[in-house]
Image 1 (cartoon, rainbow, N blue to C red):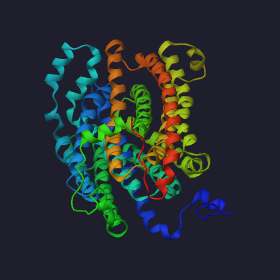
Image 2 (image 1 turned 60 degrees about the vertical axis):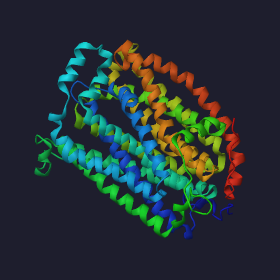
Image 3 (image 1 turned 90 degrees about the horizontal axis):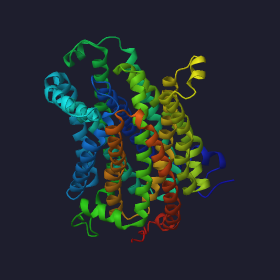
Image 4 (image 1 turned 180 degrees about the horizontal axis):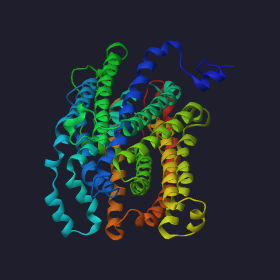
Length: 514
C-alpha cells in the first residue's frame, strides 16, 4: 500500500525521500546540521563565560536580554533588511556569516587574551556601592562587557543564521508537499548536531588536562583557556564549511533563487524596509497568531531557564564543571529530539495535522515543568524536604535534575515540532511577505518575547534580589500565558489549512488583514 507521495507505509515513516530528490536534500540536510552544530556549541559556551565569572551569576541573563540582546536584534534586523535592498539572497548569507566568523576570530585572538586590561572594574565597583543588589546583573554586563558581547553574538547566530537565513532559504525553495516530508528529516540533522556538539563539549571541558602551548597566549596555563580556544576555532572552521555548502546549492541546484524579491522584469529590487515589515506583522491577523506562538514560547522558556541556570550555578560554580554539565544536557536534548523527530515529529504533522502538532510543545512544557517547580519550592521554602534528605538526595540536586529534564524536553520539542509548525505556517505567504515576516518575527519577535520576560524578571529582582525568590511570580505568569498560547494555535490552524492548498500549487494566497 502506498501513500499520495508513492511510498510504502514503512518508508513513509522513516525515509520519505525520492531518489531524484537526494541531490538537493542531502546538501540541505548537511547545511542544517552544521548551522545547528555551531548553534549548539555557542549555546554551551556563552553561559559559563559570564555566569561563572567572579561576582556574576544567572541574574545577568535578564539584563543581557533587555539591554544588549534586544537592541542588537533590532540592529541585525535593520542590517538584514538593508542588505536585502542591495544584494541577492546568496550574498547576504556570505556577508552576515563573515561578520560572525570575523568577530569570533577577533574575540579569541585579541579580546580574550587582553581581558584583564579591558575589564571596567573601577566603574563597576562604583556602581556596586551605589546601586541596590538587584542591579548586580546589570553591573556584570558592564564589568564583563566583552563576555556580554560574545553572548550577544552567540544569540544572534540563532536568530540570523538559523531562523532568518537558513529557514528563509528553505521556505523559499521547498514547497508544502515536500516540506511535510523533509522537515522532520531536517529536524534530525538539527538535533543530531546537538548530540555531536554535546559530546564534543564534554571532551573539551573534561578530557583536556592542562592547556597546551598553543593556547598560552590566552593567559594563565589553565585547561579552561584551552577549552575556550577549541570551542571558538571549531566554530570558525564549521562556519567556512557552511558557506561552501551554501555556495554549492546556489550554483548547482537553485541558481534562480537570487532573483526572488526582484520585480517581474528583474530590472530592480523591490525595497523592503524594517518599518514595512513591522507594519505587515501588525496588520495581518494570520501573522499576529504566529507572533503569539513565538512570544509565548520565548517568554515561558526564558523565565524558567533563568531559574534553572541560577540553581545550576549554585551546584556547579566552576566554568569547566558548568560547561561539562551543560554539554551533557545538550547531548541529551539532541538524543531525545532526534528520536522524537525520527519516530513521531513528521508523522504527527502528516497524519494528525498541523494543529495537533502545534499543541505538543505547550502541553509538554506544562507537564515537564511540574517537577521542576515542585522541587524548587521544596528547596526554597523547606516544604517536605526531610524525606528527600533521608533518601540521600538534596533539594538542590533534585531541582537541577528536574530543571534539566524540563529544559531537555521543552528544547527537544522546540527544535522539532515547534519549529516545523512555525516555519510551515510561513510557506503560504508570497516571497516578499516571507521576507517581511521572517525578518520581523525571527529578528525581533523572538527577542521581544525574551526581552519582555526579562524586563519583568528585572522588576522582580529589584524586589526579591535572587531568581529563586521570584519563582512564585514566574509560576503564576506561566499559568496565565498558557491559555493564550492554546487559543492562538486554534485560530492559526484554521487559516493555515485553507491557505496551504493553493500554496502547494505555487499560488500563494495572502492572509486577510485587519
